[in-house]
Image: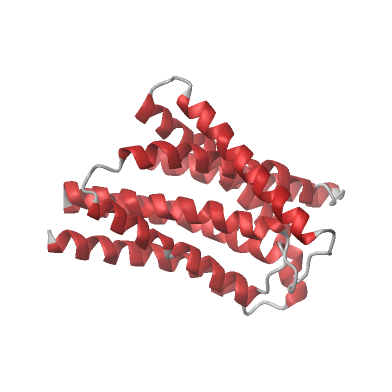
Length: 249
């Protein structure tokens, strides 16, 4: 039992450090970073859509069957993020995005990613309770899953108005929420199915909302055929990586 806790928290700690991938962009000049921000946002769009439609929703249907719960909970996630954004827009009024006044998508991304990290921690904890080998294989799958997602998340946070240093810090704090998920999973034994029942589809709904309403409109400002083609390539790359992870998993 003790070793299960130790293995779980070591694994979750390793997964959490993936969020620091943005450190590779800190050395870039600000102007150069701005030039690739739309590519990172495009990558995030593909990753969010791919994660929602290829991973989260199919797994939700697998757990609950093909009834109304998953669609209703997914729609609830979309509406929850809509309400959250409305509230933040009322509070923020029409002040332009800046380091001192970040875009609402920053908070929404951190909340959605936090829920996802919470679930990742729960899955790792549940896997190690079954067997160490399953826990290790699950951790490796999540690491492969997190690398493209965290690159995209970092791009979204900087695009939303955070400085590169703040984006890195907040992304890491969001990743640490997986420790809470691991603790909940271990403390509850394997009886975390009801929690996953709600979190999976609602997180999918949040990701769909963020990608569709906040990120895609940002790409419309670029009318250059070359840049639009590059954006499309990175969206497709994000989706393809999520599909590849499913294939190798």
